[in-house]
Each structure stands twice: as C-alpha cells, then as structure tokens.
Image (tube, rainbow, N blue to C red; front, side):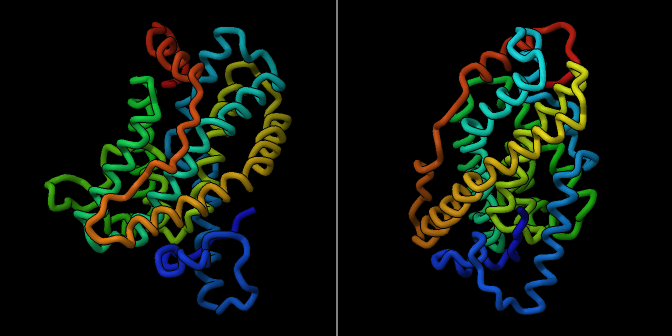
Length: 287
C-alpha cells in the first residue's frame, strides 16, 4: 500500500512521472531504497493513532451525525465515511499532493513557497462553505505542525523559520496544506502524502464513532482497512495528477499557478453539521 519516493523525485522527474506512482523500475539504487525505508517509517508514524497530532479531539462531523440519528451503527458509520472518501477527500488529496510538490520544488525560495502555500490555502477556503469547518481545518493544521516539528525539528526548520513577509511560512495554514508540506520535507512523495490525508479523512470519524456509539473496535478497524484500501488507488491517481499539474504550473516563470483543476466536490450536509455542532453547548469533540 505504501510506496514512498524521496523528495527529489517530485520536482526533478515530475514530467516523466518518476517517483509519483507505483510504476517505478525495480532497478532501484541502494540509496533510494534507504530513502524509501525512511519515508515508509514516517508514514507509519503519521498514520498511527497515537501520533500526537490531536486527531482524537475531532470527529469530522460524526458527533453531529450521531446526534441527528443519521449514524446509529457500524454500517451507517461506514456509509458516512464513504461519503467523505468520495467528496471532501478528493480536494484534500489534491491539495496535499500539490503542497508536497510546491515544497519539493520551491522551498529554496521562501517568498515563492510562501505565496504558493497562501494560494493553496485560499483554494481550501473557497471549497469550505462553513466558517466553523474552516476554523477547525486551521486548528488541525496547527496541531499537525506542532507534532511534526516536535518529532522532526530539523527538516521542518527549512520552512518554519520566518520568511520575507515577517511571518512563519508554515503557521496558520489549513491542515492538508501543512500535511503536504511537512511530508515532502520528510521525504514522502505526493502520492503517499495523499494516502495520509485519506487515512485521516476516513479514520477520524470512524474512531470517533467507536467512542460515541460503543462500536466494536476490531470491526471498526476492519471497516477502516476496507475503506482505505478501496479508495487509496483513486487518491493516489489524484495525487499523481495534482503533482504533475503543480509542477507544470511552477515551470512557467512569472505566471501564477492555475489551481482550477482542484476538485469542487463538496458535502453540503457536512457543512450544515459543522454549523450545528458549533452551536451545541455540550460536545465531546471539537468538530
């Protein structure tokens, strides 16, 4: 399921597709193998439920869905997660892969990298109708950044220092922009970065459902495995395309990158749930 490529593969060979998908040659140098092993270890940590990114504090709309009676058991919880995997995860996978590509190709130019990440942030804003949902996304970005900085401080220092605009190049961004940028700095390719996003989008509400409904954790783990493996090929294809489109946009000096290819597929009920959840006086989760 995991096939990570070193960060250099993203920018240097994007036009040829090398390092972006599962079709790489078997003739891999020993140094590349070591890099792949390192990236795979990073992926295992990032998708571990014990990684201190604060994901346990969010239900991704599951708490409100349970309150409304839309989710009452494992089958309806899985249907809820499928909805996320086929709507919001599409843009999330693309943005995560695009951020990874931006950092891999433009991190030596802080001003350029910061401007590009700003524009990706704006694309995320445009695709999230709910103000509470946008706030939560940025909260999650801060939590992800804090966790990754604490575990891998040296790689993150490349974009964490204050840039020309007098601000942190990574601070205050949407969660998937942070995940894409951070994974690129840790040697993870855009396709595997999208897998991290997919796992979070599916796993977060499912594990919340265990706490909310007392679901069998083993059966829930099985459902998460089915969902991730079933939708991962699509997420990886989206990521490969996103990386190529981003690299193509970056290859034209002086012209703004066109992000119109990022999906507008949304889930209106999720936006309504976010609004309703914020107004609740008592809640177990932040979302």
